[in-house]
Image 1 (cartoon, rainbow, N blue to C red):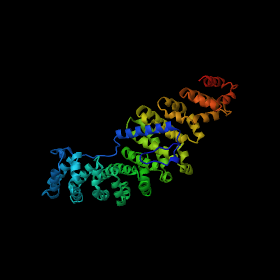
Image 2 (cartoon, rainbow, N blue to C red):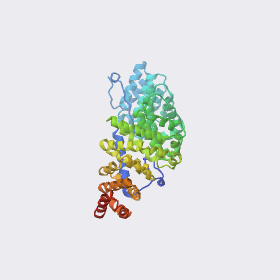
Image 3 (cartoon, rainbow, N blue to C red):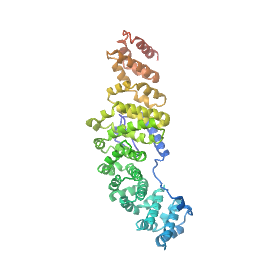
Image 4 (cartoon, rainbow, N blue to C red):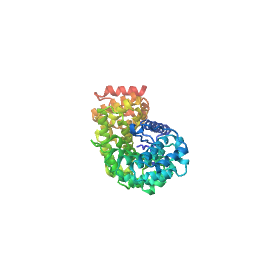
Length: 476
């Protein structure tokens, strides 16, 4: 079986089966391609909310501000005589903070963050919202110094997660997510402040926008290099995993945006290998298996390109969970070997072939882990006539050449059967294998394939196929 890695979190070396330097290189290339695809689909490391009403934006221009102008806007926001005047000053400041130069000037200005935090904690909702939006602009900065300057605001952002405004909670979650990814100092402060319990409380929100923002913030936290030791144990000890799995259950209530975020969260937790047995006992395999069936049905009904965004983390989660010893202990693996799962996987493979070839390896690694140490699974592939489609993928994915490796010994084993129909099927599949992967001929010879064929030379129904294979093997 093969275990996917996620960076920066790495699994223990002994848990990974490697088949030479070529495979390691191929896996690194695949991971790089997937990370690139994820960035291109806007699943980026930082998110920016700018849902401003066009009418409200009229009259405001996003310009670079100097320290004097920043100071003037802060003073107006603090001491203006009318609330509208104070709000307008903060809107101007926020729009200026869209520029990196203004961000740097802002954090250089003594007392600027303290003033902004004071406005964030005011009892006037509009000022509070605009102050939070200013912090959000700062959190989106590419400079870690800007993120760390926002440290005095984190405890208040956490507190406001228990508020009543879904829009304000969403803004706080995205701001926290942006700060988390940028700085270890921020994460070090947030953990004792109770970020995990605060996020766990949010997961019961009825608002989809809050849930999607929560998934984003949590995924940022789980990707931290210190997550396996300092973060994931707390997450696993909270109600989060069970609620995450509920949000991934297929059905009319499944929301694609929310599911994508939490599927990636689950992937990061699984890759840490902190306690995957717990996830399995919570029913992770059966939930993800049903979701796989749902995705296969969905790609047959729609051309929606967003489906592969969910398929990728789901396939990774399933592949990695199947490497766990606890899978066999609870008998979950056999549930996944339902023929419907195999058929669904091939539907997705065909979809990836046409729409997203970079995801083909993900489905093939799952197939590899499903078939590992399971000769009976070959029967399912035979009964569903899926061997030939699998071999045909050789022309588009070199990964298949690794996955069909275990197929040859299984086919040779069936040549010892007395059932003429079974042997005939195996002979046809061997011919296909040699056609799509000529290198298999040498392995066939080394594993005494010609001797295995000899016992069927006198069987009338098999003679033609036996001779054709003998000729291919001897002259291929």
